[in-house]
Image 1 (spheres, protein in one colour):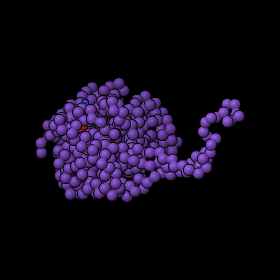
Image 2 (cartoon, rainbow, N blue to C red):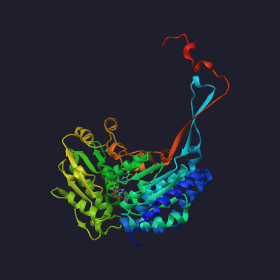
Image 3 (cartoon, protein in one colour):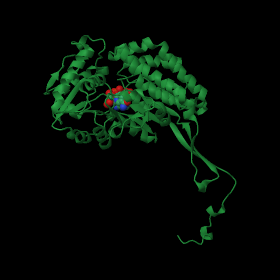
Image 4 (cartoon, helix red, strand yellow):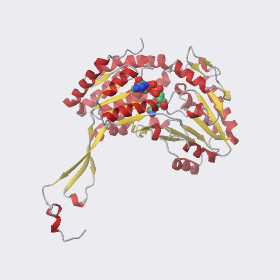
Length: 459
Ligand code: NAD
């Protein structure tokens, strides 16, 4: 397979207007049609599983099990959950009606927004493009998909598969990089669903503003991981290692840095080192379960973070193969680049504190993160963290397990994004929740109409 083959600029406007015409024709609103498209997506995953897993391996070195759990299986479970609940989500949602509007009925009726532009990121190139598509289909929308050009094998594969399995008047793939995305962003959409970094998020939002198009921005940031003295260190270490080094740390919700009291930091560092060796062996370079860095630019960015740092574990690299060893950095300066930028790779800084009381102010001194992890056996400390910090998503005593529950909305806050999805929250996000009040012709109380001089009241 070659690198992603960009869609012709001149074709982009036509493709988008074709999809908009399909939406205007109305058939994507039909419940049975939505279910059929979702089932087609399911069939695509099942029939083309080997091709999809192989593209994930070529782009990111993902092993089959990890790729299945975090990409294909994740989306299959989202599809099943959506099909199971779709009828209920589409129903009018009854609301109470005040006495002044009686006799009458009030409800909210979900309606599709129209044509959605979905722009994906490269780190989970299947899941991050297809899970928003599941929400778009479920809500009765049409969509234009723009996979990340960095995960080029997945981009090419999806450009081949989507037209074979889905209605290609309603769902199209546009391949390419900045130029093609810029061209796409000039077009009129009814919603833009973007996953990626903050800088491009701002470009997307300002392009959307020209058409007053609403956006969902699934961004990133530095997700803190607080380990309180009461935590079970062995289990904590296993879960930190699992969530940090999956996909070689290239996960938007990976713990970015650890905050821990000096009194237990040695114990935690040793436990983390042991778990890394347990999971990936003494030579992670030969582990079939460990991924690779997406490209040279990101590789060099990560190497740069290690300059003048105290590397206490790992640090070996091979730019030719993309291998970057799980690496621990102890107590980097808080104003060093590694503590200023989102790492988005296999390096974990551990910041040791005199007292765990320093952790919350340190978290709050930074932009609101996409995820926050707290490991503690103390209900009081757990509540303190929950009440006194803000983050898109929190997990107490584990890594990003909240992603496995389709009933939980997933999204950022502040600089980590706006709007959430998965399950019903995705359906709602890509629907307009239309307010409807139905009144009766009976009891037409004339008091409400002018002239108001009939009231002898002085207001
Ligand atoms: P990326 O480079 O894959 O870019 C994302 C998309 O934006 C791509 O489709 C790309 O073509 C497009 N793009 C890039 N530059 C552009 C420009 N100048 N104009 C218009 N479009 C442009 O993604 P990235 O930014 O490297 O992704 C990494 C970031 O994404 C991290 O911050 C990570 O935390 C975040 N992320 C967030 C989530 C989430 O669900 N919240 C998931 C994955 C990644």
